Image (cartoon, rainbow, N blue to C red):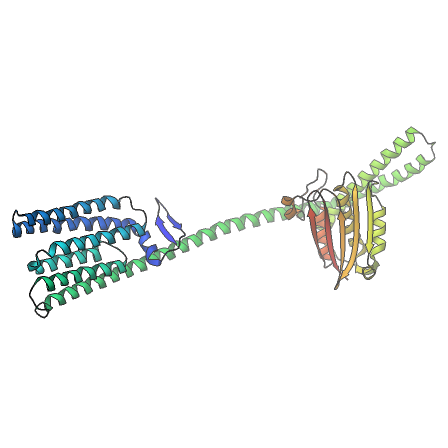
Length: 452
């Protein structure tokens, strides 16, 4: 995982890399700036070496050859400085600096081998280069160590092969070079450890800020959801309380209308059979259906809001289902039922079970405006009675499935969105649960599980 600095934020990019690569990528801009300064600093000793070559060889061909090589190194140095401006990856930077250092060491090796008598000054310059690459120009610690060892070994080879001096005579010089190398390496190691610690601190701070940011966003979302839920609960409580208060006031005139409607039907039956009588009968049936619809709305609101205490008794499930599928089923819907022998007797609240099945049957009828098939089946599973109410209607759209048991949610043009909510509440009141399976365009199956 790489972390890079943006204009005002820290950005994360996930890649497979080592910790040292992560740290280097994070510090890349600072490392490049230090590398540029280090390369500019190396221009000074390279230039001074050209002047020293002049003092040794004067204007001879040896001087022009050495000066040409050093001038080429100067040109390559300035090229690297310009190249660093375009570097965007730490791996590119480390390789570029490693190659440059190898070329610098090889160049010095070739040049210095032509004048081994000046090994003291050469050793000082080599150690200066080592210190520059260790402490001024950041790079991977492994690369720095390899370059430092190559520089020192090359200088030792030049001294031993190019002079008649014995190793013991040069022992103080070699020891000084070794100590200088150790000092440079240990300083570089400490610097890298400091960079690692700083990176970890910043990394942990960024993670903590990210977690805090995420927690703040989640907290805002939770507060918003809870506030909305509270408002919905207050609204539904108000609706329930209102329904409870006006329910009786609505039902009293409905009962009076139902009674008058019944008497009107009886009077109508005594009239001769003609077109007028048939039209009046159709009108009375429409009035009766609307009365039932109003009564259902009031019942759903009251059942959703009022406290419910089930009265559990043994009853015949098959008898209840027979009564329901014979009442108010349109002629274009075919009905069927099958109740297993071990599921016929159930311990339940008659009123609540009847309301559950009534709402599911009405829901199925509304899902089949062009007709279809309605089937109710029941069997026993372990200690539960499973009741299946299945239709061949329009089905439930995928985006509506998570919401069908939420109050006041409906996909129909007619309805208040309380029918299935009441089914869920009454089923859970009886100690059971309700679920469904639906294929859009093919139909829906509701599954009621009730304890025996």
